[in-house]
Length: 361
Image 1 (cartoon, rainbow, N blue to C red):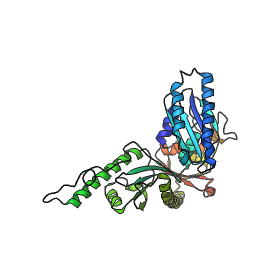
Image 2 (cartoon, rainbow, N blue to C red):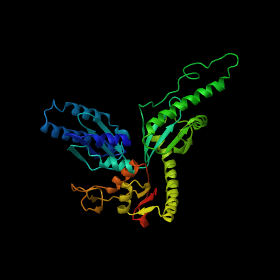
Image 3 (spheres, rainbow, N blue to C red):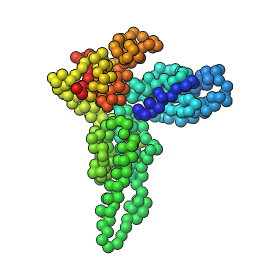
Image 4 (cartoon, rainbow, N blue to C red):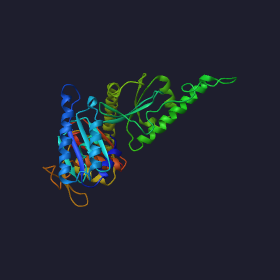
């Protein structure tokens, strides 16, 4: 799941928009019940729909729902599953935390859990730099999902692979082969750039030393590289790769947190700093937030006056005039205005009321 997926779902308007959400299980034997629960919820959704619409009218939605259910990979499920379908689109998302089981029919999709997952889970890219093929994965915590389509997986074709190397006087085969490899990894880098352009997430590289060296020569994304893992992983499945790269991502996250705390200290000394959600909310909406530092578990239901200010706490996050979580709203605002967000363990920002902001000016 990426921000484009979320934005597409949030842009859809019109009844009926179907959302099915439920907790799932990663391991046997608990996961044996997951297909049964999904089918029961799908049946419940169909009953709700057919009670309100002629079956012919909602046939596209019903077909999309049937296809979604058939595509679920229960062997590699996570802790939560979200299914979305309307007359035009459908999508399924595996989430790394349990969801409240429910079926929702509304004018819009129930995307709150997706917002939380997108904003609160450490996310990153993994490029496995093989030639048969080069693969791209999207990471969220200890989970990897392979990107297919959009030029990936990418297979090297040409001399030394699908064609013989050229021969003859003056032809240095090894130099020719190396240049073709460089060109291949330029293409890999360009394809990665198109997919990752919307979000500058950390990048972990995997591959044999030769491929890593070629990629580092040609990449335009050196600023994103968070870690490198040497070795051949052309056929390693995603769940096994995740065990290798998640510790690297955790170490990168620790380093980022330490750096941000130092930067925060500098910002405090320079007067370019805000603490507490009320102050940070106002400055974020003014576009002054360079970096938002926030505890992972901090949620803040709130009411907002006309014009977006002030922000006042609310007891009931489900009330119609309440923003269920102003922290997620602020995260979205900071990112939209070109800022960064760095998450900390609960309690780490207690001195700053659980949330702080480094200001641009």
